[in-house]
Image (cartoon, rainbow, N blue to C red; front, side, top):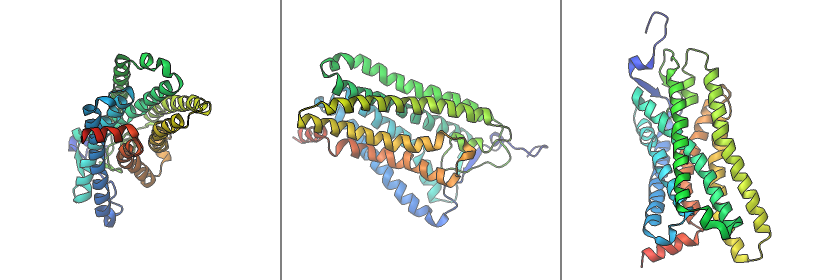
Length: 309
């Protein structure tokens, strides 16, 4: 510790992730539950990736973006769940300073990318339902690849900005992060200085990457709802509700918890409540996405039957 009573985490080289240490008797239960969900994430998303790659009938824009979502969920969960499992299993709950920077960067980058990707997927559904005759022109493979690249680039650029801003802030004596992974609001609470500029930047960019995609998604589904009301075919209605209903469910499971965390200042959150909200959208939602998209999906069931001969 230096003369003014402050100590930077860089000199010590690690942080302590408190996680769920307030409930030590529940840590083993959390370990089993998180491990089960992580295995579901791995199996479900790998299943979609492999099936979309092997079956030529699924080489469509919808399944191209769904494959991107599955790959993203795999990376997102793997960026922090193994560390969380180690922390829940043993008494050591430390993460290196470099490890914390990397974890913060990738979780924020992939979370932002998912917001934008879900908006792109809603546009794809809008084009399929409302502009069926122009669909192949609107969703040309080259354009789909450009949209996917834009999603990933926006996420990683936004994360670079916040990671730099967060780790420039001088941190006070204790290195205890009151969360189960390194994230911006929890790290700002360790600061010795006024972090209102950081909080404002976080709220502005969160509004851009959460609210704007959400508005685009709701606009797309408003147009889809009008088109559905004009449909005469029962089969067409069922197909629209099958694919669009799945996407809307995924959007709700991701955006509602994310807004609770990022669209208010860090000081406005109850930490324990914030941890459970974060646990839901970082662990539960990625495990449910493959189930939501595949259980009632005829294309996927047909692909499985073809693959099994």
